[in-house]
Image (cartoon, rainbow, N blue to C red; front, side, top):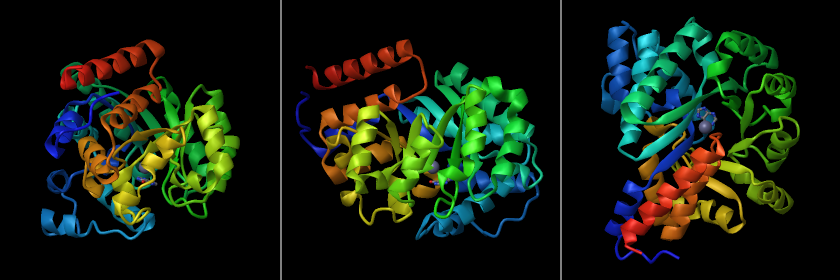
Length: 347
Ligand code: HPA
Ligand SMILES: [Zn+2]
């Protein structure tokens, strides 16, 4: 067992230096207002804001849909391959400071193709930055293509078709956007097709939607990982099943706070999840919009829930063991975390 923190500053130092993996990050949600302005200017696009401060002031949400409306509008500045590269590289440079060593990144191709930016433009700029992040920063990453659940399954099939030439660079498919009214079962056929193509399957479920949506994600979509999953806790049998199956939950505390999934971080269910034996991880979701990258998510949650060093270590380890990397990579990463903790506390 690791010792208790001697002070809030010691906890902050511990979190800051801890190696991390991020498993729930929408790359378009890392678009900082400064870059939004720069890209708007570069591409001669009008945006309905006069200043960076005005953009930030617009980021007050009461639910998921409030956020999504602004998120899709923000994407309008992304037009060229270079734009997608710059967006993605800015994310990696930022999380390099947070000791992120591995990231499995979502992108929303339909958010681009529906406004006339090709699938190839979006993915090629993103992949080029992922390659640069590996060579320049030592951060490994994978790409997960999400289907927008407010659109039809037919649309999702068309997107999977567009992805065909890129499948060796796409690790999996996900499901995001407006959850309520768009249950996972709406996408059962396209997920089956994706699975046949060897793609991993993940889905947002139980963020705003009921436990029944989580069950559908498991049973109909046969997910390999559950994004959010908060509302699973309302169903004891479901929690038992998720724990027994060793399902990883990609939990996003500051997102949950910003979208009023929880009213106060002190009421966040993360500790309950760990206590119930769930493999929970901490992630930033859409860090530009929700006010924090990985270290902020770890630290503010640790403060609010008074997490121990062992619990923080478990959360960081879960990020690597819940990744889609191979056993050798995972073992090395878990060893690096143990070594970091031992050196930090000189135990
Ligand atoms: O947090 C989210 N939930 C659902 N869809 C999303 N698309 C971007 N971020 C999110
Ligand atoms: Zn998300």
